[in-house]
Image 1 (cartoon, rainbow, N blue to C red):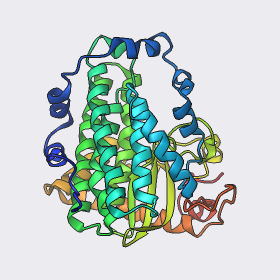
Image 2 (image 1 turned 45 degrees about the vertical axis):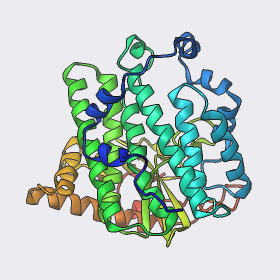
Image 3 (image 1 turned 180 degrees about the vertical axis):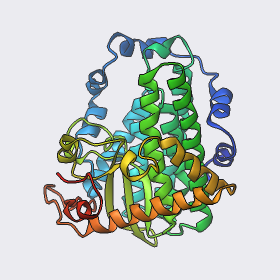
Image 4 (image 1 turned 120 degrees about the horizontal axis):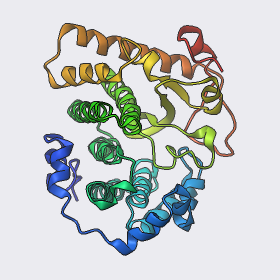
Length: 367
């Protein structure tokens, strides 16, 4: 049985060459199940979702690479949540499948690819459903307006996940992922501008945070080192519920021919207070300070990486991409030279370090 690195029915290629708006316009023909949505209109808080035992169990698991028993649990959780209606549950299901596919080497390569393919299918469904909810009368209640971009981001990484599983992360896959991520960043930057211009600050701030995260992913992909592959953090790792100090936005997988040797967590903040720096064990990347040329606007960084990735950059944009990526590479090198934070009751591949050595060279990281 062959391994398909490009998703199902060419949908990855279709996504990669079109804007998110086109994807949404083509797919948002679903009729909303009002009965399934109703409980989440009556109580719009995240606590309502925690009433689902499988979802609550998922979030209670440590936000790290798990052991073998953990991957068996993830498989059961993924199966249970895959039949739920709400996009939040589907995203958790998809990440549970994807995580098992990436890490569970007790399974065959074919089975692990199938886990990632299931994740892809579920993310596609979640994107369609989330986009529909946000373009109907329900949009008032579902106000995480950057969610479709985050779901699309997960889909954009599916080919890289599959190539990791088969142990052949080609330059073509890495470059295509970079183009997709910078495309999403440019689109999110446009949404950020439209929101602020309309005076909707809360939505603008949502997209600002997303653009900072996408800029970090762009910089990591621009480094183009097949030994260190960035991924968006899993649904539970990105949640502030349970094990809060382990929360992070990005996971960097140190791998060799498909075998993951170490996972390095990053937390991205536009700016970070001293409380934030003490709260998280992950390396904090301060978007305004570390990945914004003028220290203010992430849209300039997004534009630079987009033009470099798409092949139409100016010299000053190439300098921005090179300098910011070089700084990020050095931050990661220094972070891994720090003392390991031994707080986990598991022999996990995920490594947290103190930031003393990073802070000596890069300001704003002292705890």
